[in-house]
Length: 116
Image (cartoon, rainbow, N blue to C red; front, side, top):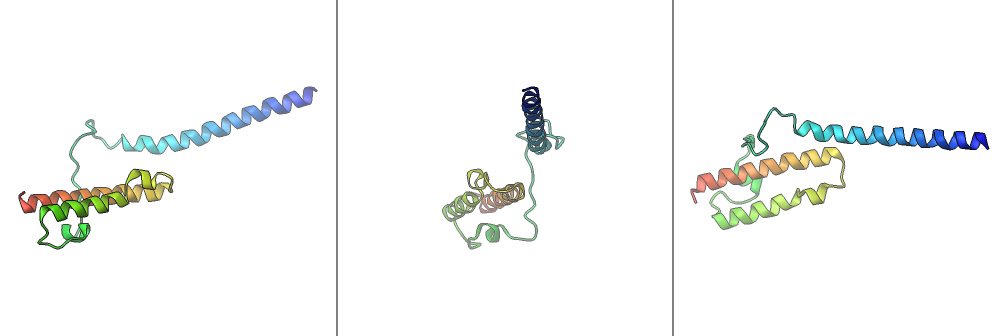
């Protein structure tokens, strides 16, 4: 009887420790997002789309009008929506975040160039 109680208590203790270790590891990645040195979470961030033109990123013609640009932006941004990648690996979610930032930057650049 005493051995059974000892096994049960040690099992609970080890289980609790394992859960706390795994939960603290997943929370550590979330804390990195807040440590970028920016006190204001709404601060403007400039994303470089590299050598690619905004029309290439959005998948539209260079002479596309505002409606076509907006429609292309909505299609592209939906591909990387957080709900679509929430169950995927952390690397995929990070890539989706980068692509989302790139698509948003291309959209903003397109609207600036169009002057609409």
